[in-house]
Length: 103
Image 1 (cartoon, rainbow, N blue to C red):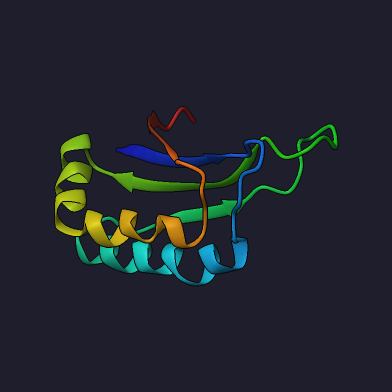
Image 2: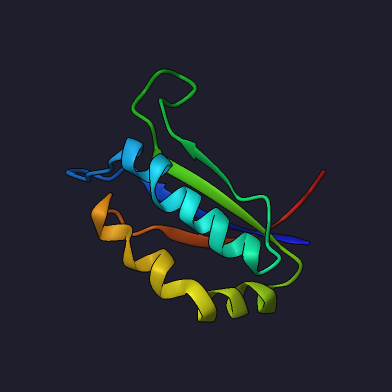
């Protein structure tokens, strides 16, 4: 099992509509991916760095997938819907990263 992390950095002059993200693309992604056997999407909104400084990331989502090929197949099927909505809630380009569970 791998995780695909989508991380939105908090960059200068960036815009991120957290309420929109929580109410529209996150549930849409969950629904679309769950239909394709990829349940368990998690999403979080950055609040602050642990030392109280500005948040380094605006949001983070993780999608569990059995393999990278399974994720790629899901993106082929529903990527336009998932990625096409990004400009509606942010000007930040998400960083996608493949992760493995360490514990």
